[in-house]
Image (cartoon, rainbow, N blue to C red; front, side, top):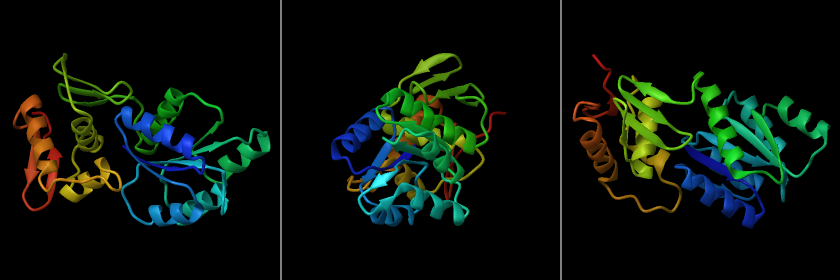
Length: 220
């Protein structure tokens, strides 16, 4: 997943970024409402971790703007405010979940996976297609019951393709998903990841749709 963190505490934001990246995500971070608006103007994020108290306003404002535009991007509110009224306000404004500080990073990661899963209409945590079973919780993959090792990038590409197997994902869409701001992207990076996945899953596991991109091949 590609996650946007909106948090003005640099130490906390950096800790979240490192922890969520270790869990296989691509993470970008901003510290103000203005920068959050600029970031969210571009597509590509799968979820937002949003602090309520920001230097130039409230995260509730950002959340309300998203929902007024009909954007269903999953949002988890993160705040030191612990009053019930604050939780109610956030949830009624359209938040998908709410976590108070201090918190456990593993719980945060699990909650993010849950709100994204609900948005996608999936009841089960794992992604399954034929003999391929991908578990985002522990970044594991099995093929016909046998474990398969993936790099973090390979895992992210495969998860993106398996979330909607019939959907064609363009090269630029995949790049946006797996690389954050400021990361250098080799011109053939996506092709290399696809090649490596085919070597591990079978050459026919992923289709190339010429001029459009890639999608998973439905099992026969």
